[in-house]
Length: 233
Ligand code: OMP
Image (cartoon, rainbow, N blue to C red; front, side, top):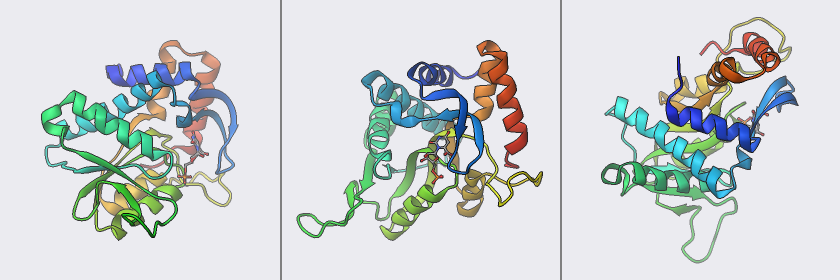
């Protein structure tokens, strides 16, 4: 099955920017992975446009397919989420100014401020608002749970999460070499909060893409890794 145009463009940009690399990488979980996704490399203007446009298309496609999916604010957790949320809301307004032109973004301060306007949120207030979190990668889920807590504390309603890449990996276990099926951290968040967690790209998309033009060796290693660590949902 061919990937939608925006996904394929983003995937190609990831590879050309070195944001998606094939080789041998040790993850936070200590798993040795044949690939790594690094969203931090999207700082160049054309690449920031590429990633924010891909987030915007993914959100719009989900909204078009699910008319009940309504939101007011894109929340970018400090620091990595900040430019992503701001650039994505801008791209959404380009895609459909009537629908998205009045949407907002906001982000948290890492350090509490006790003077000036005060408060820990910069940009739109989250109080009483439907909020979507924009983040890069969820692996163990630690960072995303912090962001969820902030939204709750500020009186916002979490209605969705969007990430750039879903590794579709089961959560790590003590031995990590067992064959027990387990969900991913993303699957757990979906179930626990009853919200959609969208991703621009997943490992399945990358495997699909490499089947068309990648090296047979990369593909074999990705296939093996996927079989070993694939999440149950
Ligand atoms: P947690 O969900 O809190 O584990 O955060 C995700 C983290 O995974 C990121 O901050 C990265 O350090 C790391 N990461 C990637 O960014 N890309 C990958 O492909 C894999 C990882 C990882 O270490 O699992």
